[in-house]
Image 1 (cartoon, rainbow, N blue to C red):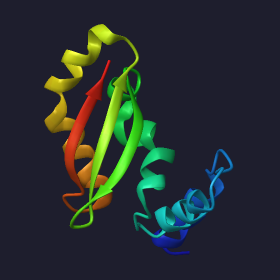
Image 2: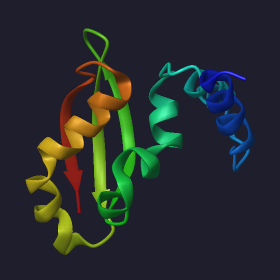
Image 3: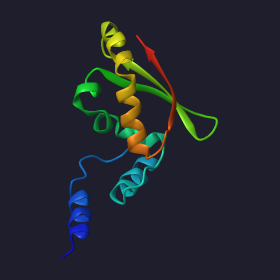
Image 4: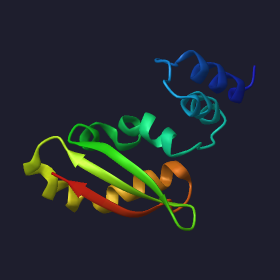
Length: 113
């Protein structure tokens, strides 16, 4: 059995929850093949993309499509005192989202308290 087939079976068997949106279903399918689906896919996988350090203090509130196939995201901190700290991590947040999508997908990040 090839290594790629083992990866496919492993990812398929590791599915932990049922998505609530049809795009979430396609997001799971696309993720198996290494393709990013949509802004809903970003919402569904926010904790996975950001990692424990950022996801524990930042929640994705909104994502809006802008001109040129880019997105504007709104992030809210779990504690208003952490909003400034999140703003210092803007480059890391951008890097993680853009890495996930495979291109410079984010044009703007806005923070809410």
